[in-house]
Image 1 (tube, helix red, strand yellow):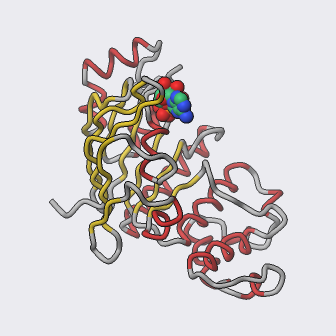
Image 2 (cartoon, helix red, strand yellow):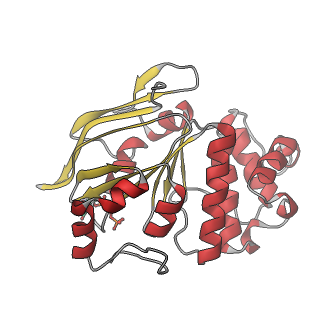
Image 3 (spheres, helix red, strand yellow):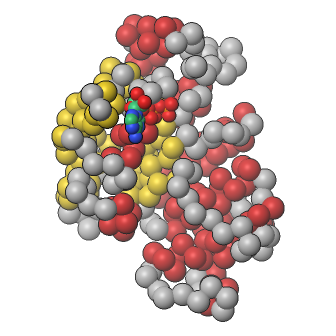
Length: 266
Ligand SMILES: Nc1ncnc2c1ncn2[C@@H]1O[C@H](COP(=O)(O)OP(=O)(O)OP(=O)(O)O)[C@@H](O)[C@H]1O
């Protein structure tokens, strides 16, 4: 197998006696779209927060292979250092500037990535505009480049945030519920777009998602967390057929959608 971009081993975190994440181990290959699903409180956000450096694990290791091919331990690094190494995170913590245009928002991210000292009023308009337009083209937003970010529709805002994340040239993109709050058609479009970026740019994506139909339709592999533990991982078919997974979801009052519309757990 090609060398993994991310190797998580025995990752554990407890909060006052509650095991939020317990001995979670998995690997992510280059260009892989890997979903992490599980009922509310399963530990998904806690896992993401440990990978991106917002939380320190009690135990375990998170090894990341950056663009230079070097394998580095992320545990102990600060979020900013992890981001600089090439781990992007979208949707929960993206800072956008509503008073700026869409293109300027992406330019700000490019400036930050390239560590320029910026003067937002003058330089941001000129610097990296071409690259910003390319990124906006990638996410299907070129025509909206000069609109104010504040007036974007929700789905477009999400796409702009994706362009901002890509400005950092991540090798790994962590996406927390990317389609939350979107209409079904918008969800499909955003996931198709993400799958295309994974395919064309070789970025690896780890995402959480409540809509299991979206997960099964678009991910290469699926992991299922329940009460902090990884109870299954495999292809969509394997995971869907796993009795333990069915039990966890059925226990939560949910059945997987077999073309019967959306299935969301409670
Ligand atoms: N900062 C915290 N302090 C105390 N307990 C926490 C904290 N963060 C998470 N937990 C607990 O850890 C467990 C896992 O929570 P986590 O948010 O990681 O789950 P999740 O799978 O992301 O859930 P959701 O789908 O609702 O976002 C839960 O029992 C939660 O109450």
